Image (cartoon, rainbow, N blue to C red):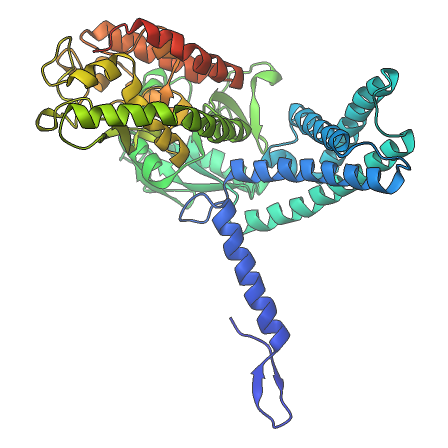
Length: 508
């Protein structure tokens, strides 16, 4: 990139100091932004991180304007503790109200004028309810004048922030860093019609990567509307895991039931939004049945298990609760480590490769429970009652699940969640058959991060899987959890886990 120059008194052309400094500052800011907000090597912006930063900024504005209003306008200010409590409560309740009004989504943040109305309504509602109730109860530590100044300044700054943010999002979208990477599933005229309709709408937040089709005759060319054919339906899962896709649009006609089911069987295991195009369908349903991408009607077949905001909440849960549990468990972990050291020779910790989110392999930490020369890294042989490979201490920590405590390290590293489907070893079997061959759609449990504990564990489906039914019930419980996730469900599972472990059922 060329840098502007100016003539020095002796005629030399040198880079302008201010332009050079500005260029370096811009580069530093860009690198800092990338480090904080980018999610992969393609420099795509992480939507959960962006939404978390937005909500945090809203809360910071509310707290800052509240503190300034207190200090500037209260002749006899309340205690520092009272001011802090009120500003934090107002900030928290307001951000929750904005979330309830769907203010924290990338789509919503692209529309600052509509956001301004939501901010106005949400802030006024929260102030009227909380401050009005406080004055009626005679516990409000500030005057109406202070409250009015706080309200007006907060609304102004939050609205201004939304307009600036919208400009930034438009810039990131133009640069291809905040787009939904999309593949078209199904070729031929139907795919071409959908692509043409999307291009007419000029949707800059949609980036079509290519087309997948299982036909190689004249019904499906190598290129559809200028986009390449990337592979067959069987190659879709691997492409998704290696490349990263946000949206899949299925253009196969709903009348082709067998072919459609073949595709969906492949896609149901992936953590991705799936839409079926209704553009060419003669079936006309109620308008509320359809979602739209631009002006193209779609049937919403499946959404990724956790929305952007849900992932923010779950990540906060893992970091905050995970850190607290790690601190509380540290003395117990120290005692277990000492017992293992005294019981048998070898390392205290044992690392095992297991399937994690999106079917990727991760190294899971456990306390070693077997003799070193008898460890089974791939879990190709089930651990049974009185298994001679298990040490005396190992038998106790396996029965009580204390051997799983080091997985809190995996949680803090971001590889696992506190709650989720348990990660299974690569060669884990039910009876003599691999899990994925026993349960149809087994990999669907990998649409979320694996957990230290889960719905299956507190419902008795833990430990040995010596029959097909046991792994089937475990997977059913995992899929129930994924489909019904909520923060309260996670907290319930965490609270119920110690009681479930007391039985020691099926754990050897």
